[in-house]
Length: 190
Image (cartoon, rainbow, N blue to C red; front, side):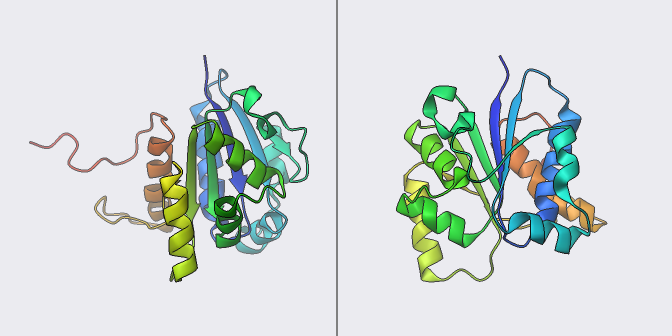
């Protein structure tokens, strides 16, 4: 039985992380997996601004739900989705989730994932953090979420911006339980 994954894209800067993540999911090409994609109100505009493209092409590969669609399967725990990744995750979205505000499909799905004790991965893209951000991240961590900052690593000796993006995206794929061929520290060395 395949994985049932929700991917949410918010209006935080860092649309490149979402694009790369979705491309890698598509390349995994596992027909047993189910994916539901949802954009926040600002996410499409940020995607267009930062990447110079329209994300509508993703509908060719994924089922995309509107942010107000509370009839989406993953708006209920009975649908059995096992993982939700919010990439990038704005601090506004994170704060609403931490406060239990389910005012759109993203925050409702996150609430469902938490109440069902499933995996919620928040790829936060903010710098610096204020105390409210830190307290909200603490609260969500205590509730079972995984905070995975979009902080590239350098031990793989990245040569391009895409290599840097991959250090974050491959880590998120690992956290979500996907097999991927990303760099692993000291793998294969004795």
